View (cartoon, rainbow, N blue to C red):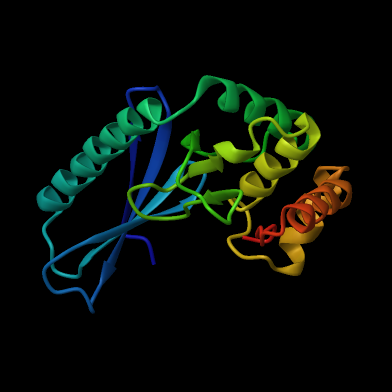
Length: 190
C-alpha cells in the first residue's frame, strides 16, 4: 500500500512520481528503485516521520541530478543520435536510457547495458565494431536498447528485438561469420 506520492522535477524538467511505501522490515535505512519510466518507489521504515521522508525525497532528486551529469559526460553524441533514431523508427520511442558510449575494454562482448544501481540506463558499445557495417552496429545498439525492457535473453526479449529490428537474424549471422573467420569467440547474446 502506498503511503503518499510526491512529484519532483529534475533539472532537465522531467517530472517523476515518488511513491512512499512504509515497510516494517526496514529499521534504519530507506531504499528506492525505479518502477517505470517516470516513477520511483521509496521504501521507508514503518515509523519514519513525514518530515524525514520529505528530506529523503529531496535527496533522491539530488542523486538523480548527479547521475544525470555523469550520464551526459559519458554519452557519445554519434551513438546517442543513432540510438534515438533506432528507438523512434523501430520501437516507437518507447525505450529510455541515460547514457550510451563507445568503450575499448570489451574483449568478447559487443555491448552491455546496466539495469539498476548508479549506472542504471548506461549502455556501452565496443569500439571494436565501430567500422562494421552500419546495419550490424545498429543491431548491437538495438540489442542493448531492448535490454532496457527485458534484462535477460528471454523469449520476450528476442521477440521484442526481432519484431522491432528487422535485420536481427542477418546481423547475428554476420557476427557469427566474423567470429568464425577471426577464430575468436564473440558473445552475440551477452
